[in-house]
Image (cartoon, rainbow, N blue to C red; front, side, top):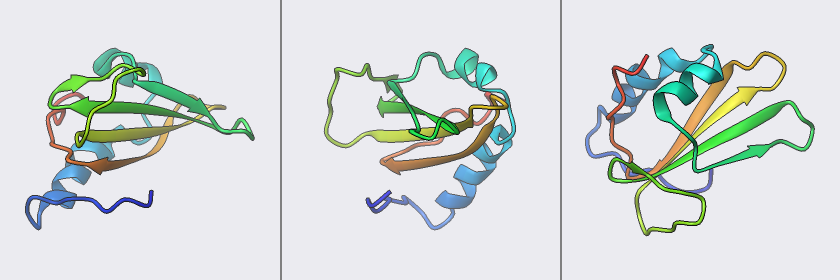
Length: 102
């Protein structure tokens, strides 16, 4: 994604994987029911995936027209044929707050 990630401690990537890897293979509708409306979505030009982007300032999901310095951007990549989550990516000052959502 081009931006470097900030890890508060050396175990942070493992904590993120533990919290979010279980979402891979889940239906996007389950994500939307748990996380709510994304800040924005982007359908890839070849129509294979849609990216659901959530931008957080603290625990608040920002709307598309909001802007903030810092915060966290979390992207879910969803297969358009199956509706299942393929992978995720994040950047910024992300905290693990949704560990029990699955």
